[in-house]
Each structure stands twice: as structure tokens, then as C-alpha cells.
Length: 287
Image 1 (cartoon, rainbow, N blue to C red):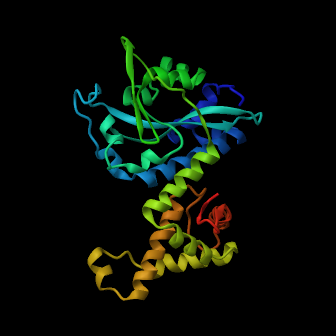
Image 2: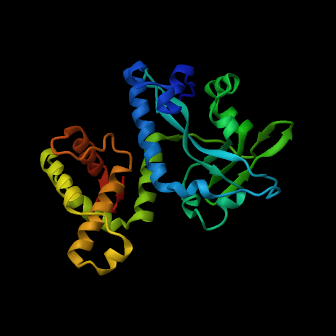
Image 3: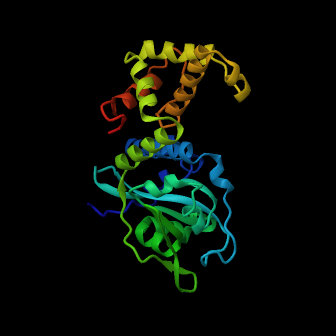
């Protein structure tokens, strides 16, 4: 893999949008920003707001409570079509080693790639020195600043080898963006739906942008959100329609490029149709 590291201008696309206005970016940078946006949406859907509700405790496995951000290291194409590394923020909260070992977030144990936790002080890159270090060598940056990494049920706690310095006794391997997004989307299906149910819903969606727009707009306006008590007493037709609406919003949150549901919103409908085409209906998962 080409190990070229992005410069500071390119790395801005990994920082919140308000710090990197899209109109100031090149087409390649905008494409990277869109890709990262899809990844961010998907992780947010996967973790949900509850990810900010975990708390570390002082002295727990040598890690004291510290507000932290979750990052993944992925490879994306730069302006020249070469692979470059991006450190992308996908969540936040207060974490500990126990967070990744108990049953509260078992999904984290199933990823075939690493998830890294950085303290808020490090992860927002407010310090120009930290920003420069990260841009020049994200792998080195992670090895020196991570609180811990989680992968396949294992947690690698940072070992202090000097004041303010940490390192992991493991190799940091960046993962291609497409693989990352595919795995996250499949995890979302397993947690928020069932593969067979999600496949059946996708099959029902029209492949024509105009027809799809009408389908989604009708569903959105026809079916109200139902509370638990209302769902319990609703007839089967209402329950089925309400579930379709839930699945539609799960689909939106998987990182489609645009989420408008108005009839005639061709860009939004095209994004959903493209997502449908990436689905392997034989195995009920994104390929």
C-alpha cells in the first residue's frame, strides 16, 4: 500500500465540517469529505447516543476516567489517486478497558479492524503541534497518544514508557474505507434489524428514482411514529407500516449521500438505489 501521508490541508476533511467549509475544498477533497460523512453517519447509527453514557473509573486496569473520542484509521484516495491514511473520528464518550470487555457493546468485539480511543485533549487537534504530528504520521500519532485500542474482543491498553508517552504492543493496520463501511453497515443490520427483514425491505423499494421518491414520501406522511403502547394495540397492517418506516430511517442513517424524501429529489433517491445495488440479496448483507 502506498504510505503517502496527507498534508494538513487534506487532513481537514477528518475534522468537523465547520472547520473545513466544503466550498473551499477541491473536488477530490469534497469526495473524501463525503466518504468520511458516510462513515461517521454509520458509526453514529451503530453506537447511538448511549455511547456517551459509559464511564471509566480511576485505577481500573491502569486507566483513569478521561473523556475520549473513538477513531478509526482508514485508507482513502488522494488527489493523485494514491492511497493515503486518514484518522477519522466516529464517536465519543468516557471509556475504560471494561467498556470493551463487558457485554454492553459486544459489537465492538466483532470488527476486523482496530478502534482507537484518544483523550479529548488529543483528539480535537486544537494544538497545532498535535495536528502536525497527526498529519505527518497518523500511525505514530496513534501509538503515542491512544488511551487504548479494541479489536476482535481484545483490548490493548496503552503502556506508559515515559512521561506523557504511550505505545501498544501491536501493529497498527489501516483499513480500506469500503471494507470499513461494509462491515459497519452489516453490523447495523444485525443490531437494528435482521438480515432477512432488511433484505425484504430493500427488495420492495423501486429502482426508479421518481417511483422511489413517491414510495418514501407516501410512507413518511402516511405512517405516524407509534409508541410502545400504541404499537402493542395496533393492528398488523399498522405495525408492518410502522416497521417499514423505522427501516427506512435506518437506511438513511447508513450514510447515504443525501437524506431528502421529497418527491423529485433525484439525488437522494439515487443514493438509496446505489446502496441497494451494493446489497448481496443471496447472502442478505452488504458485499
